[in-house]
Length: 297
Image 1 (cartoon, rainbow, N blue to C red):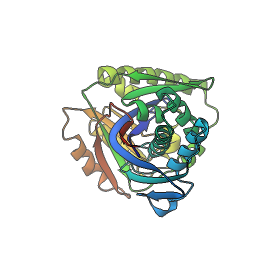
Image 2: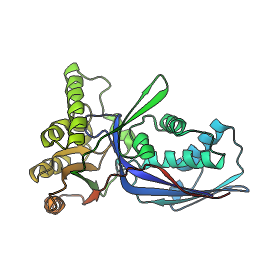
Image 3: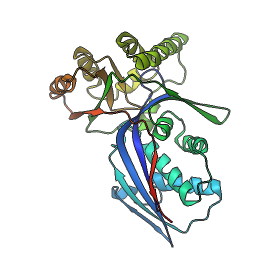
Image 4: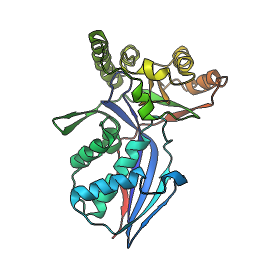
């Protein structure tokens, strides 16, 4: 039996499309046991209690890569990361499955190899990297190799997730993006990404405000989210240093100063009159990443 804990993540962080990500202290925990036969899944809704479960399919991919022949699997899921909200629930499932399978098969894959395999399944490393390593990361794939760098985060910042009561699939959110971008949009994002990384590390408000802006994906995805513009403008008016779409959405992240203890209350009043229900949740940064909580033969 192996128990794996995976943190939630917020990817892109505005201009760092498919590259930047931060891990937070909101977790999914997967307990996996190899059994004599069959497949048993508990802790999720009925539509995921089958062979198409993302944790299970990720396990199978890892088993195949290692050449391990398993008999049966018992999977118990404790999921606190909301599904299809832009907080890395899919990456958590993938990484949890890959890590559990690796442990059951004898631990043949290194951490970097786990990252590469999980990225192959996910398609991009922006969520997988912080989920595995924790903290604030930059990641990219070059010639089939995945690279990750740990980035500095100022301790003077607080992150708030504004989570709606409706989902938004990554497929739909990616489907609205243009296949080609103008040169000025690319230049815009390069500059903002540089400022964002610097500002998050130093705690410079102006750099974070400028750096949170984006020209590649947020305006297209924001059009799919009822209340998006109102929330971005409202958070800004209430003192947010930066506001950005979390991953593919629909969750919206806001950054405020640690000293601004009334920020969440002010925003909560602002969003109370919106058509859909939104909750605001303060998220602390997870510095550990994915953890093997326990393992037994």
